[in-house]
Image (cartoon, rainbow, N blue to C red; front, side):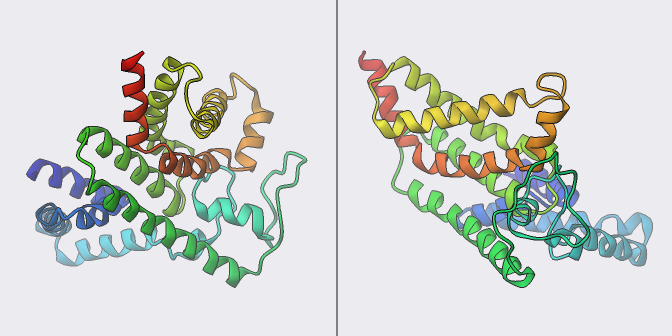
Length: 268
């Protein structure tokens, strides 16, 4: 536990994003882990003062806080095709930027223009709902004891997707947070293929959607599909939308569904 808390504290100190894991651990009832990690975060903030002095250390933390503050004006609406967070996805479809749109690649994406204040509130509501949805996993797991590792991996996959969406300025490289969910869905697809078509219509739809989204995401390289198609995917924030869709897919393709499919495979 000590090593895990230390690594998590280091990650929070450097990148802040793993802080959502503390929220998850708290509701999982892992209070010792939360307390240990919190203590190490505080220690990691204080230790540099021994080398650079208290005042300079405080100045560094102040600058760091301003940089990562999600309420910072530059992060409220991000007019950036490379960003895949909600702060870029939602405004892209519902806001008129006064300073001009990024390169439009000759296409339109705005669905309807929503007033700034209304859209800010709507985006914060979506963030809160995504954070609260993590509780679905926490309480769903409490009565499930079959294949603990699969349930843990499912929860980890969901937590990573939510993290990449609710924190601002998560650019394309942040899609590394998608990897656990993608791996989970690959397992789902392999089980579905072994069953051939002896699965429900819902399971078929989930598998087809996941396969198509992952295939398109996998070929979105300028050396594969060319600059124009990559620019289009960035303009529509395709990878961020993939994260949103996969949140829904994970809630449908729960571990008990995979375990039931596996039992059918073993019975064949």
